[in-house]
Length: 215
Image: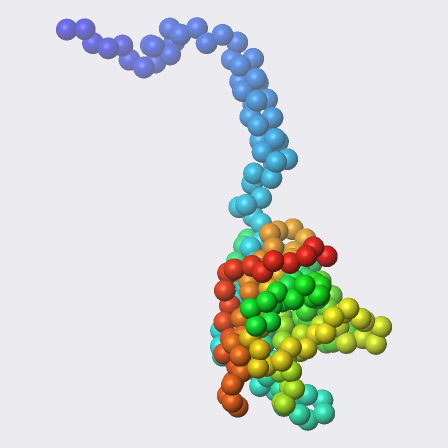
């Protein structure tokens, strides 16, 4: 019966050649591969921000409040959450497209929305959202006895180029996207059923996208 030689003996019997040469070559190849993967963004998925848009038919997404003139209003906001590992930089929310009574409004251009909980003087500035942080984006406001209004710029020199009010009696859909400078865009469509009576509007979000023209 032949006993297999011990591992040290096998290792000693193998001609490994100049160890420094092949070890250096292997290290060089590893560095080249790693550098190439970094350049191609292979590792970005593990450290990139990840924005998620949330909505529910309750506080704080839907809120009754008062306007400066004392009249009542119903506010609709989207939650913007960062579930990734990196800060989402320069986040901006925009209504990309709108549909009324099931028909896409071709005259509606992309328009920027206002961040909630921030002074109006800075509410349209790009916002950084840290990992685990949630912010709210004001999208719509329904004043008592009035129409749905997009919560966008109110400066005297701003001209949206289209009517930013929509009749409550008509069902509406608004595709909203939040863009970040260092990650993927998050998109959802806010659906509002036709308003009947004096109750609160029935709202929901869906994952479908509306056709829209590029800005």
